[in-house]
Structures are given as structure tokens and as C-alpha cells.
Length: 310
Image (tube, rainbow, N blue to C red):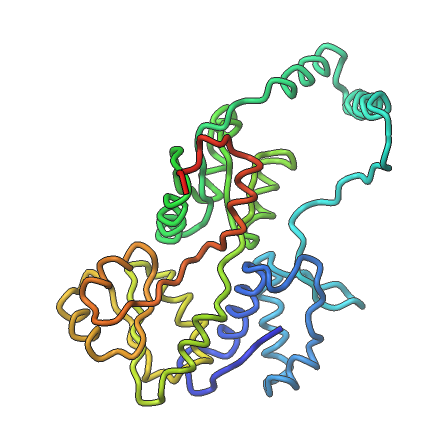
């Protein structure tokens, strides 16, 4: 686990630490079930107080990112419940018998079981995609990036809006979210709902670019999304000094034009990238939130016509 802290940054050490672990989980750098360093090991390695390490782990546990078990330490939370393991070669008849027995044990009669089987053999066509995140500005960023890949209708939603949505509407929707929110969404939708969990893009290339900027150089972070700006500020805290980083919105064109001439590195999100490119003498670094692994996940859940030609 690659972690670094900057004690001169205005961003608190605990916030730097939780942001980096959260991002590594969301990008797949830390795998579900992977064990994290012990509190003592983490504190010694980073030169922080034991209570700071504990508070970071507790905050991540409350978010559902990790789980802490007495005696076994902290691990990355696996959002998907364990499925019943079936031996290879189990006959279809045995599978059907098991399903019927389970359904009857839950009070379903033969007619209801038969109707459920018919519905399963004639699945509802997915007609839209919903990106689920509590923050509307991040929803907009995800939708913008997905628009490069997909042509079907898309909408951004909060978990609360998903829970309130009509059941029939939900069955026609493929839901997409990050691993940080997958557990809650799965609890709302059920285990068999069409749900794709995306990985966030690795932050390592961006950190390498930021560390290469000289101490006297300026790094400009440009985005109209407050959450994106906050996320990148947290992640860059250990890679540059606080006075090197200037944060501004793309809508402030006059200031942006001045900064573009002075900055050694300009970091922007996908929606702002084109506008910033026109004002800058250098190509800005576009930080895409979504890793391309998501395409293979979506290919299993969406019809071929849902994808833009590549």
C-alpha cells in the first residue's frame, strides 16, 4: 500500500490518509478482502500517532470501505455476498430442485414459483443506465465520461432516489456505482439486480507528474465540480507543497487564462478539459475518474447497441 503524508499541507493528516486508502480501494489497487497494515505498523511507517491511524480506519469502516474484525485486523470490505458454492457438474435437475425447495421454504406456492421461472426466462430489456453517487456534481462527471462510451439514456441518482424509485423502473435500469457505495446499493436493489461496480482510475500517473514539478512551480487544478476539486486536493497533498497548488473554476476565464500562462502543470476533469485546452499554451492533464475496466463489466449487462462505435 503506497501512502504518503505532507505535514505542511492545510489538509489534515487523517483526511490525507483516508483519501488515499479510499482511492486505492476504489481503483482496485487494494482488492476486496485484502488485509491492511496493523495500526501499530501503519503509525510507525507514517510517523503518526496510533490514535490518528485508528481514527482513519474507523472513518473508513463507517463509510463501508473497510471492515475491522477483532483479532484479524482491518480488511478491504467485499461488497458482494458469498454465493452458495456449487460443485462442478451438478445436474440442472438438482439445481432446479434446490431452487424450488428454497422457494417453498419461504412460503411461495407452485404457481408463484412457475411465474418467477417464466419471468427469469424472459428478462426485462435494460433501457437506461443510472449512475449512483450521493453528490450531484460527481454524478455529472461520471455521466460525462460514460457518454464517451455509451449511447443509451443515462441519469444520475443518489442512493435515496434509487430506494424511492418505482420497482418496474428499476428492473429496466442498469445501475453503476463505485465500490464505496456498492454495498448500500446492493442492499437496496437485492443480490440479482443489474449492478456494475466501477474502479476509479489510478492516481499514480498524476502524482508522478505533480512530484516532477519544481518546488517553485505552480500546479493549477481546474474544475467546476467542488467534490472533484476536494478529491484531487486531498490526493495531491502529499505530492506538492500547499503554496504550489492553485484551485479555480473553469468559468473564471480571465483568471484561468492568466494562470494557464504561469502554471507548470494544469490538472482538469473531462468536462472542463476542452475549454482549458483552448486557453492554455500547454496540454492540460485530464484526470479521468473511471477506469476502462468498467467497459467489460457493462458489456455483460448491456446490449451491443448501447455502446458507441470505437
